[in-house]
Length: 351
Image: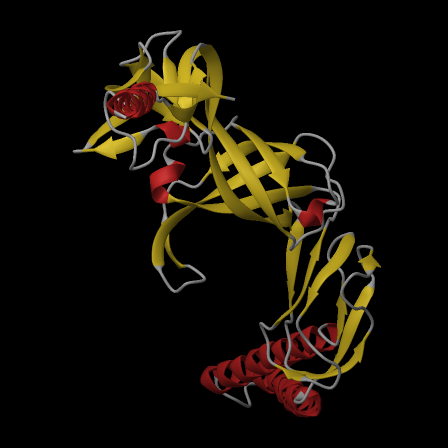
């Protein structure tokens, strides 16, 4: 009986030792990558709006009621095509003014012609003659002015297209009463397009004319389109975001360098502006880097154990970061360290 107890005791002790050895030598499975020279592109993502390079707003020169409307949004027009007609509210008053000015002119003309004969015979003084001549000149000027205003008003009855293009926007309706200066239409060329994107002031400092751009989104019809930055606004403006946040943004203009897909003026699209590209530099996954005490750190694997390593970042994007100091080619880096990872933990790399 004592021998059996000794045997079982030894067996249990041996099993415990095996478990302890197993636990001591157990390694945590982690995802890691061995870094090597790579390339990286820094970019700024934003939403942009397609617009026509050649567009013009048609303003009405006269007041009145829209009596006919010949075009609608999407219609193609040529320079000189009829867009609308206006029935001026005060046309009759202007015609009456011209008629009255004509009567005054005829009376002044007759008086001045008589005055010439009377002055030659000495029947009237030089002063009286000058007064009648001045009255005739004033009446002539008034008649000319009234006729010019009437002619201008009549021309304004018919509004024609100032250029070839497509009606991008119509802001008036039939029978609407309008005033002088009303913006009635926007006409533009739908083939000659560009993109405007309002970029945050913190990001726009990275952007320069010549930067390459990728243009995407449902509005493109599927493929990613290509473009190039042609202009960066010289000043930022306050713009209220969709969430009601006041932001400083500057407009960046982008030209297409190839196919424009199915895009038309007014479409919203996604733009990715590449601000810097580097080749043959060390990079790490963005998920591998974390902040600790205001510094950038990663976990490396050295002799099978984790070790903290401080790094200095260069350019970055959503997927990876350039490392300019702290690592060397061939180092193994934990891809997604979490709060359970500590220094000197035994780990094994899994794919």
